[in-house]
Length: 272
Image 1 (cartoon, rainbow, N blue to C red):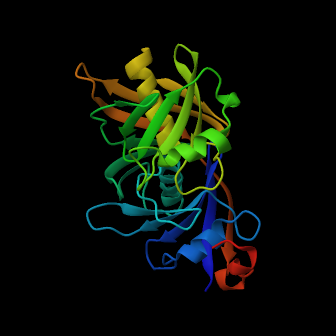
Image 2 (cartoon, rainbow, N blue to C red; image 1 turned 60 degrees about the horizontal axis):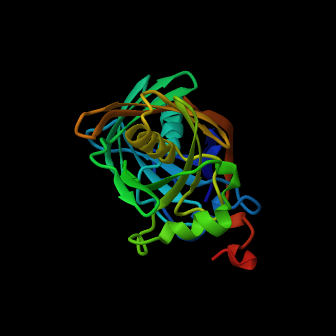
Image 3 (cartoon, rainbow, N blue to C red; image 1 turned 180 degrees about the vertical axis):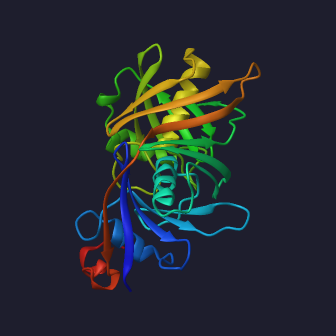
């Protein structure tokens, strides 16, 4: 099987983007997904995004994690990357109405800057020493003094299965206030075996928590290990957030062709 792909990065969050719009070139396989995303024995990526045809929409997006699992929530930076590639492919112009696992979204493309709308957030719940919200993906946000001091292996990753998320897991974010309108974050994502350089929905979750409990107004600047993002929103008196946007640049780093069956046998490297 020959598979054409585009490699994208958005604030260091990198993805293999596959055009499944006209023909089904990629069919989900946990083993092949993990193999393609492996950084030594495959292409290397935080995940795979496929662009699919969907009646009533410009397209649909499917998301697969680097560990071979299917994404069970919105992938913000992956969606922004796929929006740009859909424009390159001629599927859309500068605006898209598309659907992902959490429902319908609007996206805007202005050169390398991609603006993604997210679902409204109806509540932010105190939980343990942080806060939980669902913005299309489950996120827990903990405010800390210095994000660089967090031991992600010892503290971050184990929290992904904290109570009450023992079964389905939750994405863990650590956020630090650095200016009256800016935060710095680090994220441990479900479906990844190592810390990503950024997480789009994690940036949004952290910005909204910072707004609700620490008084930050829209827009909130978010610094990640891989780059800078901006989150805009409207905060209502009842605590809800609407008109939420994640904005930042995306870049196609290369385009290529891979033959998954010719890659080194995945079992030889204990990847299962």
